[in-house]
Length: 207
Ligand SMILES: Cc1cc2nc3c(=O)[nH]c(=O)nc-3n(C[C@H](O)[C@H](O)[C@H](O)COP(=O)(O)O)c2cc1C
Image: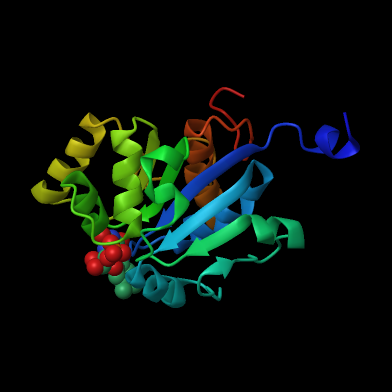
């Protein structure tokens, strides 16, 4: 076994991350800073609205299609995170024959949740999510809106009934969370747990 294999024995092949225009862009950026440790390729699709929200909420530049080196990422990690044009239906993960095992949409706007729940492909992100659902792979969404209307709740229920994991951007406070960072970490830990990534960002209850 080579030194490289020893150093990185457990990296998975690929994951798709969708970023839609819900509030909470920080969850997406923080997740993208972690995932290259665990996946050889992190394919990213951003909606137009998400770019607007990111500009509003964070001091992070989002490039066009191609590699995205996030703050604090190594050059190698930066090469593993790749942005796709959200209208490019020729992306590999747009096909059931090349669907990844896992996809996360974080944050997931109510509009994106509605499109996916009703199979309306308005962009690559919706289409890729539909592929994950039809191929019975794992889709995790992190919705954010408040209050939730009956329309929102119905759409989220439809997705849950289709096997989608719904992790609302709804941090708990029972673990002594007291800072902004603790609250973000709480939600990220939930996502990582459901991706079955053995990483401990926050203490488990009872520890
Ligand atoms: C600063 C900002 C914050 C927003 N926050 C939310 C939100 O938390 N949840 C939501 O569903 N929509 C939110 N929106 C509205 C969505 O961006 C809008 O519905 C958009 O059409 C979603 O498109 P997308 O699903 O293609 O990203 C926000 C918009 C802006 C500009």
